[in-house]
Each structure stands twice: as structure tokens, then as C-alpha cells.
Amino acid sequence: MQGASIIFCPYNYLLDPMIRETMDIDLTGQILVLDEAHNIEDCARECASFTVDNNTLQMSKVELKMKYNNQHCKSRGLLSGNRWYEIQAYRALNQALGRCIRHRKDWGALILVDDRYRNNPNKYITGLSKWVRQLVQHHNTFSGAIQSLVAFCQQQQKVQGDLADSQIQTKALAS
Image (cartoon, rainbow, N blue to C red):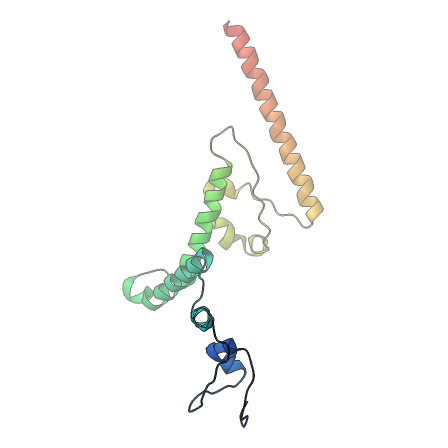
């Protein structure tokens, strides 16, 4: 907008520094005339405010923690930021497993769609709880994974049915 004598535009273009920068509008030493600016206070407030949702706030905390760990890992004996983040991911994954399977009669399947578990099992599978490591299965195709999941569910339902039948027989003998 260099060299312009008069600029006609909505005044929020002039109030918002991001828009001014994008449009290359420099107000230094300029006279600004606003016409019918009855809601200029609201517009100025909107230009100078922003909203932060909980997800953005949490991600910022994670980023700051990773940076802090990276800066102080050697001097304070902390994990590097990436290693700390990996441990947090494994903790969440293992918590999901724990919520799926709460006692010995529970059963469930956790589907991990990530090549890292196949490509580097020593690194990624060792982050899982010990009791589940030997149960991890790899599948080359989606249909193979679904077939395996169906077979697993059928087997678990059969086991539950057999347990229920044995409990009924035990109760009948005890009567």
C-alpha cells in the first residue's frame, strides 16, 4: 500500500496488526480517519484477544516440558525431551490396556496401527507392559488383522461360555 494517499477498507484491517502486516500497511506518521466507527471498541478488543482451548494449553505444557528436559538433561540428570515424551506415550498406552482388562476374567483387544511396532520391535514393544508383550501380533493386511480379531473374540466368548457352564455345574453339585 506504499504510495497510496487514501485507503478505503474495513477498519478492522487497520486495527489488526496481522492484517496490517499482510497488507503492508504502515500507519507510522499517518492520519487515520474512521467513519461510522460505532463498534470500534469491540473490534479493537477482538483484534487484541485470542482463545486458547484446553488441548492447545496441554500441548504447550508438553512442549515446554520437552524443552526444559532437553536444556537440563545433562546438568540435572533428566531424561531427554523425546525420551520423556515416549515414556508418557507408553504410560497412556498401558493405561488404556489396563482399562480394557481390569481383572483376570476380562478380555479385550487393543489395535495398534503403527509400523514402528513391526519395524523396530525391540524399541517399541519393550515399552508395553510385560504381560502383553508376548501377545502382540503383526498383520500384513487389514483383512488379516480383522480375521485374527474375529477369531480372538470367538475364542474368548467360547472360554467365557465354558466358564459359565462349569460354574453352573459346580453350583448344582454344591446344592
